[in-house]
Every structure is written in C-alpha cells, then in structure tokens.
Image 1: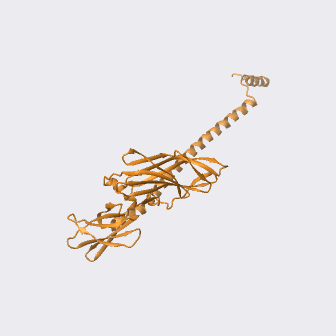
Image 2: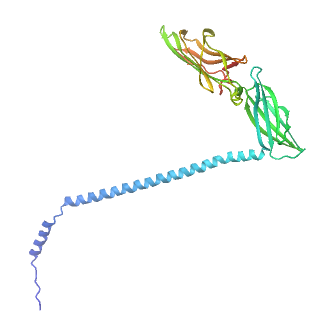
Image 3: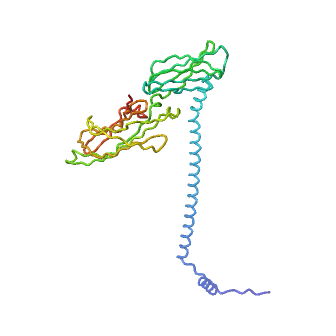
Length: 331
C-alpha cells in the first residue's frame, strides 16, 4: 500500500509567494486594464452612434427626396389637368395670330388670324374672330374657309399694346368658343432701344455744385416683326441731347458702331463738362430718323441731383420694353 505524502503548510505558502513574484499583478495594472476596456467600449459606442446617425441621415434624405418627388408630381397634376381640359375644350387643331403688315408712320398694323377645326363638316361650319385692343370693345370679323378647311381673316387696327383674339366656331346650332390669347402690337413692330449714361461728377462748393462728364451708350435693335420680315433698320442723323431742369445744355452727333447684325451701338463721350446744382435733374435723349422719315426720341436716362450725389429717377411707366415704359416717342 502506497503511502501518501503530506506537504507542510509553510511549503505551500512559499510556493504561492514564488508564483506571485514570477507573475506580479499590481493594482495599477488592474485599473489600467479597466480604463483600456472602458475606452474601447466608448470608442465602439461612438462608432456605432456615428453609423446610426449616418444611416438616419441617409434615410431622412431618401424620405425627403421621395416627398419632394411626390409633391412635385402632385403640384404638376393641376397643370396637367388644366392643359388636358383646355385641349379637350379646344375645337381647333391649329390656330395663330400674327402681324401680317405694319405701317409705323401711320401707326397701324394688319393682324392675320387663322384657325383650323379638328373636325370638318361641309356646309355646316362657319367661324368668326372677335378682336379687342387693350381690353376695349370686341370687334367681330368674319373668317373665310380655305381649301385646307382652315379659316383665315385679316384686320387693320391702330397701334395698341396688346390685341386679344377669340374664335367662335359655329357648327349647326352649336357654338364652340376658344380664346387664342394676346399678341403684342406696338412692342413687336417698333425698334427696341436701350441705353445708359455713365456720368462722372466733380463736386465743388462743398457738395452744392458739380461739373458733369462721362459716356453715353445707346443700342438700337430691329423689332421682332422686322427681323421676321427680313427688314433692315437704318437710322439717319443720330444725336444725343442733354437737358438740365428741362433746358438743353448740349447736343452732339453720335458715332455708329455695327458690332452685330442684330443691333447697332451709338456712343458719345462728353468732351466739355456741364454744371449741375443740388436739386436739379438731368435728362439724356437719343434722337434719330429712319429711311421712311419716322422720327424716334428715346429717353436714355433721367437723374436727380441730391445730397451731393445723383439718383436715377423711376421710369414713367414700369414695363418690359422701351415703348411701354413711355421712354420712346415716335412721330
């Protein structure tokens, strides 16, 4: 029988102490490990939150884009419905209103109106155009049917800003009215003028008086109607006139520079400065005559002299072009 050996307690204690010496774990090491573990958990949490935020942002952007797309489609529905309804109510396959002729000196234009019905029944169809100028009384104009079953009519009218045309198709006892829209008249046949006065001011007498110099530029472009009809525009005796408080102080010829086939530029540099005082106003006019004897007077600039400075005055009638602004006078 094998005899068991009993170790002495002191010997076991010595072995434990020896192991501690070989693999010492101090409190500092323990807390260091804990801190590293917490940092790792924190960094992992930050990365997770960043991924979540990124995912949320992408999701929000995707939802916003979808909402925007849906809203855009919804917003287009009324336009689509309106277009469809107008097309359904429109009895014409084709229609147009155009300026067939213009007499600038007599200030009259001839409008040509055309409408082709979608359906045609021989001997059972007629048409009338109704024309009004600047919202005035409507004028009835009988139309003539052509070989292609389209109706055409022409009417000479005095210049106005816009002409509105309505066509009424008569088929049996039933009328089919349709609005052909508005057409610009005076703005479409008169040449287009644009210009600027680049003034330079030298103030004396403590800002109460100044001498004025600078450059004046004017561009003249043939009207849409002229360009469509391949009509050229030649202006004779182009000149600039400068007024102070309604009194002309200078008049000079302008030099023409044709930089483009669509327009002509006229320039002048003030050689002799003129004087103005605070409270006065300056007007710069461009004047010329075309080959038909029509005279044009265009207001390039109107400025008020105030507080030692110059302020541009408001146009007489705010609008889109020089005719409707009231800046162009034609005689």
